[in-house]
Image 1 (cartoon, rainbow, N blue to C red):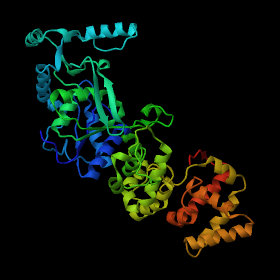
Image 2: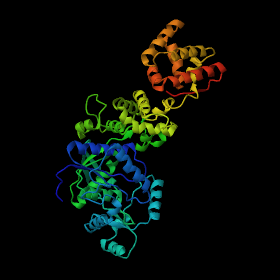
Image 3: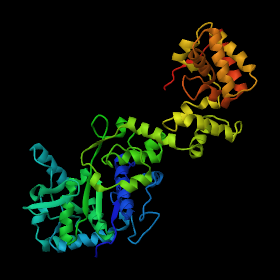
Image 4: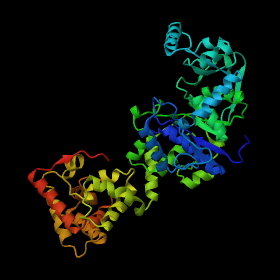
Length: 496
C-alpha cells in the first residue's frame, strides 16, 4: 500500500462509558493537528470488547463530539473509502491477518483455558513474580497445533515475541524509546470468540486506513513496542507515534468522577460552553507560546503544532475553566444566549406567556457579563420572573432589622412619585434621599436590591429596576417592608 499523500489521524474510542475529558483532549489534539496541516480526521469505533460494549455510551460519544464541534471527515454517519468504521464489522479482516501471522511464524495458537490462566496468575502472585503468560503453547509443534485447530479445539492466537534483543521506536515528543523483548509477554491477538484484541485490530486498521500519525494518551506507551513488533511482522511501516501527557486532578491524582466532574457530559450539564471546553482542553499539555489563553477555534487551528505539546502531565484547574467560560460569556451577544438560557428559565418556572421576548432579552443582557456558567442565569436571575419568597440571610441581618422598613417606605414613596421611571431619575432620587437622611449611597442601594431581588448582588440597581418595571419594583419593596414590620422576614443562604 502506497503512502498517503495527506496527513491522516484518528480518534478511536471504545464505547464502554462516558467520554472522559482526557479522551476529549485526545480527540481535540487529533482534530486540531489535521485542521492545521490540511489533513483528515477519522472517527473509528473500537467495539471489539463485546462484554463491555454500551449502546448508550456510543450515542453519547457521538453527541459529545458533535457538541464540541469535532466533526470527523470519515467515520460513522459520514462514511468514507475505508468503511466500515466499526471494528465489530471488520472481523474477517482481523481473522485473516491473524492466520497469516501464524503461517509466517510470528504467532501461534494457544489452547490454555481461562482456568489454567487463573491458576498460573495465582502461583505467580504467591511467588512475587510478574503475572504473564508462561508460553506453554509456544513449544507445541506447528503441525500439531494446526491439527488441534482444525479439530475445533478452542484457542486464542498469541504474538510470538522474540526472547532476546530490543524493540525500539521513536516517540515524537520523547525521542527514542527502547524496550527489552524479554520483559514483553506473548500477548493475545485473537480471542476464543474470534474477536481481535485492541492491539491487533488497532495496528491493522491504522495500516489500512492509512493513518500517518497516532496521537493517543501516554498510558499506551508500554503497548507500543508490541504494536511495533506487529508492524514488523506484517512488513508495514509504522505511523508516527505521539503520546500525549496525562491529565491530573488538582490534587495531583487521577481525574475521575469520584473527585468531581470528569466527562464532557458533566461539563455540558454544569453549563460550560463547548467553545470554552475546547479552548481549555487545548491548553492542557500544549501552549502556543507567550501568555495567550483566550483562543477561539480558528485561532487554535492556526497556531496548533505538535512541537508545542509538553510531554509533562497537565493539571485540570476548574477555577481556570470557570474563569475562561466567563471570558466567553463576555464576548457573546444576547442572540447567542437566548436559545441556551430561555429554556432554562422556563424549566425553572418562568411563565413564557407572561413575559415578552424583549423582556427575556433584557434579562439576558443584564446577567450574561456577571455569569460564569449557564445555570447562573437561573440561580441568580429567577427574580426577573418570580418575586422573592425569601431574602439572603447575611444581607437581611444587616439591612432588614427592626425599623428599617421606614427606609424602604421612603424610597417607595419617592419612586412612586417619579415623573419618569428611568436610570437617570432613579439615580437622582437615591442620591438626594441619601443626602437628606445623612446616609451613604450603599445604605440605600443594598436594602433596595435585596427587597426587589432577594439576593445581594447582580446588575446595576437602576438598570435592574427599569428592567423589572415600576409596578414590580413598588410591589416588591412594599412586600419587603411589610415582612420587616411583621417580623416575618424569611431568609435563605445565597451562594455567590
